[in-house]
Image (cartoon, rainbow, N blue to C red; front, side):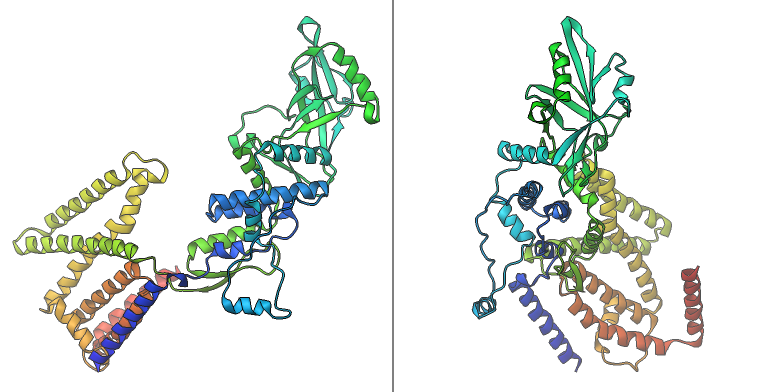
Length: 533
């Protein structure tokens, strides 16, 4: 009966192994796939935070750039109220023959949702957002949406006058001071009002007056040392709101500009002062990144997306499905078995695991032989620690020598200890403890393994302490091997090992004496008190 059960379990394992190896497409739907199927909607300003989400999900850079391009083109059209530039129709995704058949039936054709994947496909056909053509469109949209509000000196004295004490107001928002050679220095003090229906990213735009005078602007703040993030911060100006004051400075110009600007400021209509804003939001990739942060921080859905993304990273084998509502984060599903990552990766993990096992067995065998030769136990422990420490240091130097960040030797050493050296040390200690129990009962380890498998379906026989711990160590090593190297077969192997472990535990419980039951009860009580404390 036991032999038949072993044959059935082995056959199930082999069939599952071949199934996963031959069908790698059975990987569960990941978080990124659900993200690509998320409905975007028609509000590019609200959807722009998805660019940052896509980057956090480690999507390909080409997809991030394409989504950014599509949303920025739609965003400019949203500001100006014009229709977005036409794009080549996106081809329908490949589907199964059954879905294609259902789509051809009357009423079976459904309009394709405008999801993230569709937006990315359209974005690949748009012009580059860093190119001159789109930057000109961006500038025109901002000049349409932003209106200068000149600050009067009576209402608020600009902070730049604290340093430039010779500056005098000559018109609302215009300050002047004499310069060398009959020239004049000009300063502007203003706020920018958002007259559009969407929030606008704003970063210290330059201002051109009358098509000739160019002013370099900065926020009118008390000057203090700033971090790089603070210096490049982009402000999101809400509809109907005004920006903080801007202080704009131009190089010295001819003196006649003083009287001319006053006359133009006093005039109204087309004869008045003509201002052109020159935004810097698309000057560089760094500034574009800060624009994305501004949109992400302003979105109410950013926190929920971050929580789902963090959960997806901690549980990589969880199923995810796209949300039904626009811009909502994917919905969590059930956990699935880990996918098969290919035989090359399996062989590499198997070699690493078996190498750690051989090292642990070698250190244990060397210590056992030295103990048989009469070497003190303390000396054996010191030599074992020095050998393991030496291998740890050499491996750390080889893998992390000269690295920075997480490649620094400190972090490499921690990773080696957690993933390799620590388990080896634990294995050596466990082997010494196990063989001390075996020696007390004069048993060999292979005898405990054979007895455990032979009594797989027997729950009435007696089991000694050595038999219990010997077979339990055998099962623990097999399950660790499956868990590290043979996923997704670890669940099947764990199920195959569960039956003999359960029957072994039952037989051991029946074999306990009253004294051993009392000792185990005291241990459980102590553990319970420790947990409650």
